[in-house]
Length: 366
Image (cartoon, rainbow, N blue to C red):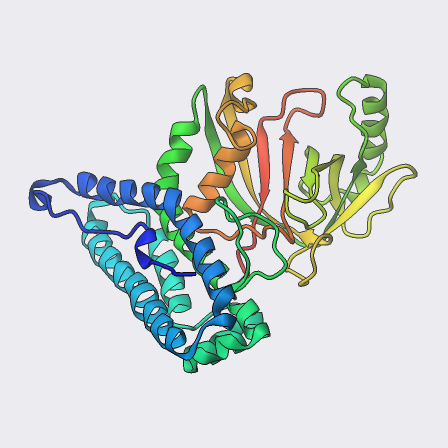
């Protein structure tokens, strides 16, 4: 199987009257490139993964030729692209049009492209291939290096999340920091974000029920009465919530599970007939609960129907806007292993939800 580096959507600086354009116009040119690249590059990275997974069948001549292709036409070209972007964005930064988060995204991408991966589980394989490309002929090294195809959104469940998957995510992060801020603004149609913050809380426990109380007012009252009776176990974030999670698995292999309830202090007793999920401040390295007690907290104001519209959204408006703000700020989302979200009912369950929680992992790389 042959591979062409030209299937990536590479950045080409604007050469058409660029000196006469305003900083906003020049930045928009970069944003437009990022948006188009997001529609092309995920498939290209998946094809790169498939190509590298076939390296066990390469002849010595093919190994030599493909080493040059991978090193010079892919890794080095991405590094040069990042250099051009950084130079132009740095020049534009004093004008105030540039999203500062893009610079951290570029730095992370440069590190990975240079073989300085931050994924501890991949360091050995990456080091071996960078020092001697023929190491990719080894089955286990090849699997760790190439990974598996993760689809157009980069969220398909895979057995091995490899080095190329990290490159794919880094490429996406650069593009998201460029175009997602405008996307999140555009999506606020009929409503707007009233406040947005990141909370990093201590150990806590979510207590609730997996029953759907949408058409069961008596059952909902019983749920709330029980939670109200546990005042001594409040954790400080005491809103009514519908917690949504997938047991640490991808959304393509595990359906969404909902719990109606509230966050309580760590170790709070679980009433009969209730379920619980524990939350801890840092990742324990295992998929699923306990989840991480770090999340974005977005409050919305405006038309409730617009907030909950699913027309044209991946999930619904509040979910998409909250996620897209996070992506635009280059804050890691611990998908799938520690991924969870929640609708927040600031006026109590039984009223419309007007706030959203979205799992993050700000200290993932500290």
